[in-house]
Each structure stands twice: as structure tokens, then as C-alpha cells.
Image (cartoon, rainbow, N blue to C red; front, side, top):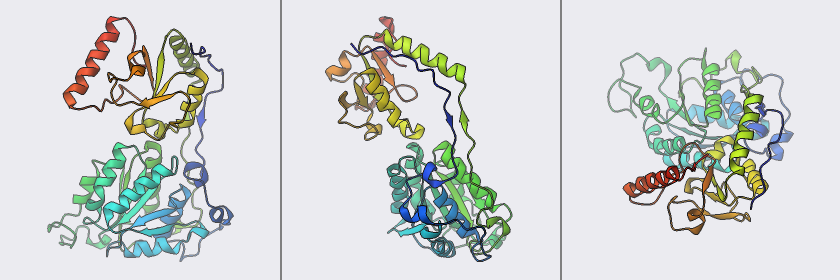
Length: 366
């Protein structure tokens, strides 16, 4: 039988999120690490576009996947001017906007808690990219979708612009993105541009969801005092745990698990959001329980682990490992997703399983 779990009386974890890309996003390259910080930017460097490039690099998005268009050409010039060797980004051209957004999605996945970014043009580009952004939203990935927007002088002018649906309304794209992003920033003046950009990026990191940033096409190359090299350090408020609640929860969970006979650990996709993949493996090593993953979490747990049994497709499936499990320890919120078909069978097997467990007086999920 697996060894009993013993609570560890450690101090409450404090997720202090530093201000450097090497801690927030991916591991920096030697060129990034060797780049000396500049005390202040010249007026040519203190532009909105170059400030955005530095902020993206600061959180780990050192490659921006792009498709040029007449509304984002100036923005792309400014992003490219801030070279990676100087703390900026590298532009990666893509065939179309959907490819660019999916590349940003994959970049965020591959960087182990990193951030992806794409830059497209107004409406025709944004609506092309929105399917991938919606996918990133469902997968809890921080993807920053940057769109070159209309000239700031066009707002309120009642003009009909190209790349629109033929009406003097520039909010169609924004309204679409409101459903698949956790924050939307429309930057059409320089006075609050710094605040809007920082709020969008920090929200993407805190929520682990995509954000939308629209930047008027005439603003990226204009200098402003708030875009100096180091205006305000990028900082995220730390998340604190209540020590007493933490210890009580650990003790209760350990006591509950030690009463079980044949528990199984089930890994879910939100382990990526919580950066808990290594902790999950450590728990599996410590307790000796069999380990499985949901299909949406494939790749987050090493399948060569000595206790790994299978991918978890259906809790009432034919696998012998599930048949004898009396308790599942799930690393995600709610019930494990059942992916067998058809949909009605999924719900039926879940309801039947819950009913069986309740009738036997056992609790199926923790």
C-alpha cells in the first residue's frame, strides 16, 4: 500500500513575481542576459512602439509573430527598431493572421509559463486571428494580441474606413474580442498609453488569459516622457497564502487520503496555469499513487513516470486502473472532463459513477 502522507509544516508560499523576463517568462538567451540596461532613452527611443517592445521582452515575449498591414506598418517598424540585443523583440513574419496567433499560442505553451504575442492589422487582421485567440482563452494561455488601429484623428469623424464592414463604427473588432479576452485596451492617445499597455500585460499574466491591445496607427513613432527606458519597473502584486488555512487544508487532505485504499492522481490542464507540474510529480513520487492525465493535460506530466498508467479519457472506461480506483485526486477544479462519445453517454457515465460512490459512502473527488 502507498506510504501515508505527512503534512509538511513549511511557511506559506508567497508568489513573489519578479520584474525580469527570466522569472516571469522563458529562460533568456545569452545575448539577452549580456545586454546592459540603459539609464534613459533618447527621444527617438522613447516612443510608444519601442516601449511596447521593451515591455514584451521584459515578460518573456521576445518573438512577436506578425503579418504586415497598412494600419500596423509604423508599429512594426518601431518594434523592429528595438533589437533583442538591446532588450527588445524579434519579429517573425507569418503567412496570415491566424497562423500568427496560433504561433503565439504555441510560443506561450513551449516557454513553460511564458507569454506569446502577435501583431496584426485592423479588423481584417484581428478577425482573422480571433479563432486562435479564442483557443488560447479556453486553454488559459497569456497571448497578447496587438492590433494596429485607426488613426486617432479618425475617431468621432464619422468616416468610413477600409478594412471595416462599411459603416463609421470602429468597435466591431473590439466587441468581438471582448468575448475571448480578459482585458481590452484601445490606445488612441499618448497620455494614458503607458498605463493601458502595462495594465493589459499584467492582466494577461495574472489571469493567464489573452488580452487585446489596439494602437492607433499614427502613435507608435511619437516620443513621450512616459516611454523612457525605465519609467516604472514592471511589477505584479504577490499572491499570499494564509498560513493557518494552508496547514489546516494540508492536514485534512492528508488524513482523508491516508484512509483511502487505492487512490489515483489525475492531472488536469490548469496545472500549467498554476505552474504546478513539478509539484504534481513530486506529490506522485512522495505518495506512490498511480498517475494519469486528462487529454487536455497531455504533455504536462511525463508519461515515462514509474507510476503513470494512461491518459484519462473516461472515468467509467474499460481500463482496470479506473475500475479499482476508490478515489481520484484531481488537480483541476470540478469533475474530470469525460471525452468519450456521444455527449449523452459522457454525462450518463459521470452521473452513474457519482451515484455509485455516494451510495457506497465514499467521496470520489478531492
